[in-house]
Every structure is written in C-alpha cells, then in structure tokens.
Length: 277
Image 1 (cartoon, rainbow, N blue to C red):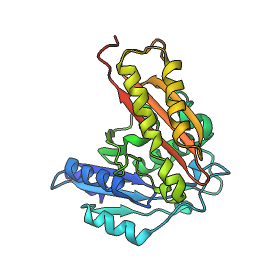
Image 2: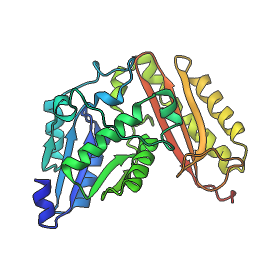
Image 3: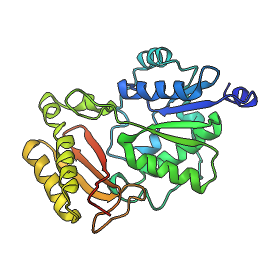
C-alpha cells in the first residue's frame, strides 16, 4: 500500500515501534497523521526486534499487548500496521548488518554493545519495505535519532527524519514501555532523573562552562533522591554530534540513564544558553 501511495505522489509517513504503545507512541502516530495529510498514508510497524537486545536484557519479558496496540493505532488514524515476524525479517544464515560507527559509540551504545547495530539494521530493512517519505521518532531516545539521521545521510536513504517531543507522565517521568517493570517504590524515585537534568540545565544557563561540574551536580542530585537506582551514565555533549565539548558552548545535550531492579530509565534535555558562545 505504501508503494501505491508513492505511485500517486502521496506522502507516506511511518512510525516504527516495538509495540506496547503508550501515549508517547500515540503522539508520534498523530504527528504522522498530520504530516501525511488527509490524502497521505500513515504506516506503523510493530516488531520486537531481537537484534537490539543484549544477552542480559528483557527481550522475553518485553510486553506484547497486540490487540490494545492495534486499537490505539486505529484511533490515531493509522492506515496500515505492519506486523513482521522475526523469521520474515532475519534469515537463519543472515550475514549482513548495518553499523554506524561514530554517533552510536557513547551513551547507550557504550553500555549496550550491539544495540545500535540492531537498530540500524532493522530500521534500514523497514525503510526498504515500507518506503516512507517521512519517519517519526521520539526525542526521548535522542541518541537513536542522531544515529538514524547519520545513517540516512551516509547511505543516501530518501527519508526525512522527524524528531517529536518527549511525552511525559504528570510527574515528569518520560513515558516508556519498560516503565511497567518499575516497582512501586522505584516508580516514585524514577522522576528524579528529570529533576536532576533540569538542575544541570539551570547550572549551564547560569554560565557554568565546565562539563565536569555539571555532571557532578546531576549525579549528586539524582543519587540523593533515588537510592534504589544505579547510574549508568551522565553526559554533557554537543547536541548534534554527541561529541564531548569543553568548555561548554553552543547547544548542549544533557543525557542520563539509570538502572533500577528490572528497568532502565533514560532521559535527556537540550540547553541553548544565552551566556555561551
């Protein structure tokens, strides 16, 4: 159907997901509907991609509420839902993968080896199958957006990547399908990651140019409020390239990740300080 829409010069807007859709996903689907227009086509995929899970990660426990997901897609105006099986996506003797070797190395790429290889491979295959004009991803996974943008640029893939704002719970926690794995006590602590990043951003806006000072503040603020968590990383980087930057200048990305007992929480924000040159 996406190919038919392209033949008629209509816009195909695509939202790749792993299912377990929440309001954040729904906002991406609604954005796709708006970008496609009344005559365009909106396609969503639901595929829990085994290649982007590490050996100690939660592939078998990842929620798969298909009926509820399909209902949310329909309510958001999705025209077609693509539901591939792993056997359809990956041959048993597969030997071809897609790697991005710069933007993917730090942050989640450092703590989840092979993750972005799986992301790039599956997104390339989905782009080949769906042939979208536009693909929409959430800014919560800022590094993923940066990696996919670099991949699209480097491979001349004819897709425009749109980054949509992070959708949040009322207490500020970034929505994630994995949040259901937080215990009640952990769920109370998890929003502290956002508060810690906001403290770091305020420090930058006040004129701090030493990334080590900002990182220490974010870590201290989070650890004081979330004793059940273990920090994976806190980084202050150039927003576009994800390169280290010292002294801080331009548009800055503050990014953090933390482990709880059965869930890993990530978040980020960008700072465009008027005091930095």
